[in-house]
Length: 172
Image (cartoon, rainbow, N blue to C red; front, side):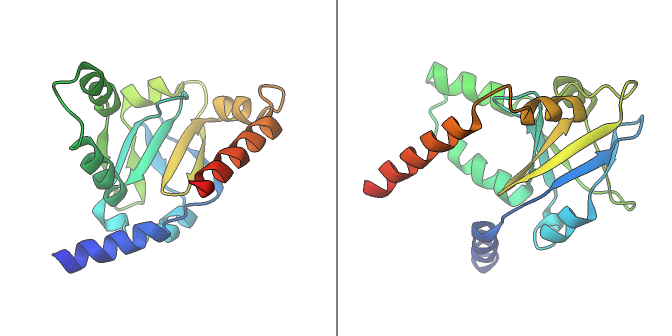
């Protein structure tokens, strides 16, 4: 078992999910999972996936189960008798759901999470899945368009700040 965990940890260190994938979700909330992402996840996909709300944006986050397990280990270090830690765990874990691909390669997305991400199955069935290194983000087409609208934020300023932060981390 230790060997298996070491191999998963080694693979997760190299997990680098990439791409922007336009998908459709049917009126039952089933998403045909993009084959390019399946290929990128082939080493860990058999463990399943975990979907949850994003902390900062109206989108969903999809984690390979081994990555979710790593996050859960971090939670084990939090103090459940500390009100801030407890509230964070409650809110972060609320809605987290284990998913598996069905035989047709689809994921059934929970309706409460679809609602959170402004995905209305009666209005529009188009989604955008973004590979984000060790996880994936699932956006409604409308919210994704707002995300990349350059008038909404100064991406160049953000890039400059991130570059400064990385430089500071390297100097420590």
